[in-house]
Image (cartoon, rainbow, N blue to C red):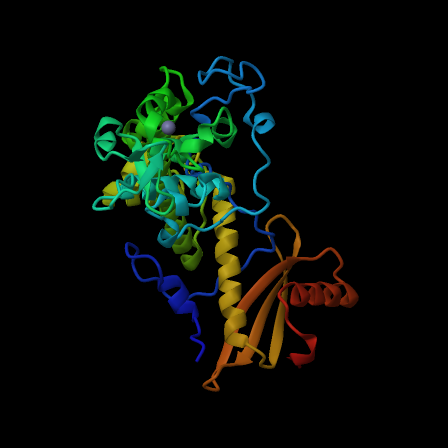
Length: 403
Ligand SMILES: [Zn+2]
């Protein structure tokens, strides 16, 4: 059965610091709510895609060394797969290098997660496996397990009976891997055991070889605690928490003032004023009572304090919309009567207050303040037009209107 929210439950919910607020009809404001901009946006999970500058492979085809300045990766990289794997699942992490899905097949935002899973699994040493022996000329040769200790990046595929490079699989760009047979250690696997030792050394190459760049990326990735991106992400996370505390505190104050029908603003809201108005004074009281709130306001960013007059209006509008939702939820598809009261406000504007009258589920008469509407034409036709506008705005059917 659908659980209905009542006016009381709406005001009493989600605040554990405020006193219980008595039931009250709150006048919604006829303003379309503008969402408050969120200042702190957490960046996407960073990948190490940008840590290794790309290289133009059209030059120097005989060297394994990085010789050119970085170029735009988008111009240098093979066309990405038409469809990325968008969701990571641990079952996609295979120990055997021959079974693995290339990192670039995953969507960029989940590649870090995939790499982390592989690094946790570590390189495949094929422990206990009886390495295949092949006849090379007249000599039987096989992979030597001691190579795994000599080369800390080396791993072995049981499926292909071949040697692979773990960091190159994780971090070498596809454009690099396709150059000069680098993909031997990432895609095909190396199995010429006669020249294996020399080939492994050649694969490592000099300090700026593709392999060493990939290994550097791998080390950086493991050491992300010291990474600038991680520090930045941690900082924004903290800022976001403080922002939410400020927003919630301001909203709590706004809800209380709306429920009590009190004015928000004061005549003098300057910092040395003895009475800065209800909202600011209440917020100051709140800060004194709650250490977290005080910390969020005093030590947070200065550009999103959530206390300016526009924010107060936005909060009031959001509350009005929520109250209207509760009223409409109470009304459901029942018949209703509208009470209209016409009055001038202090600025001599003609206002029309609209109150809904209906019988609730238990048969009791309920009156709910729905809206207040400024009218320019005080004739009966003008009032009728304004009334229909309000009922249409709130999605009320005129067929259910009685009286
Ligand atoms: Zn490598």
